[in-house]
Image 1: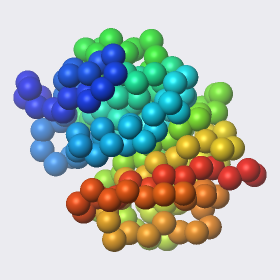
Image 2: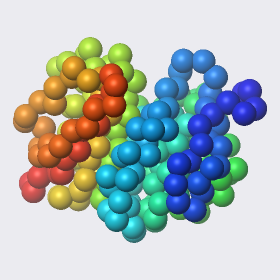
Image 3: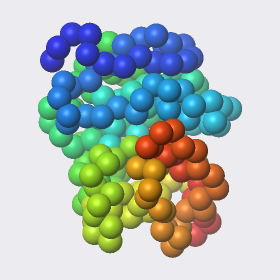
Image 4: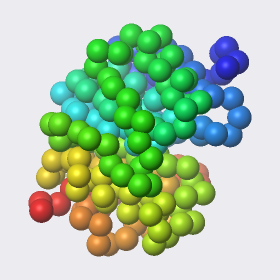
Length: 193
């Protein structure tokens, strides 16, 4: 991995720390400006949060959550090359005690989580949004993970291409969206079951 390739934590106790990213196109971290806006929106909800970082890649989102007050983050990722970089980032940032990794293919199954989490941040590869209706459809993946892993009322965040609409029948009440160029953040809460 090329040294210096990465993105920096935008706030909190780890502000300015480098999160290394696998070179190439395998990992597309959320842009710093969008990540900073997202964590400003979440604000006090991060204090004591138990977070799922879905399609974690480098782990920048989960590391940012720890930096800003989350007590536990589970990084969910399946690519072995990306998992090696993620592990290096956990060590270099000193967040091993507050984090764990679930090497899970989210298109097939949900991670095992106990206790249930209070926040899920989903930043899937944008090409999977073309898989509407299939097991690769990110909205359906998030719906299943919310049902299996999140507390009722938990906050959920989806980063997606701007012209993509959330389905209405996901068990998630979508409350707001924010646009940043061609990227959109959709925020909601898990409905009572």
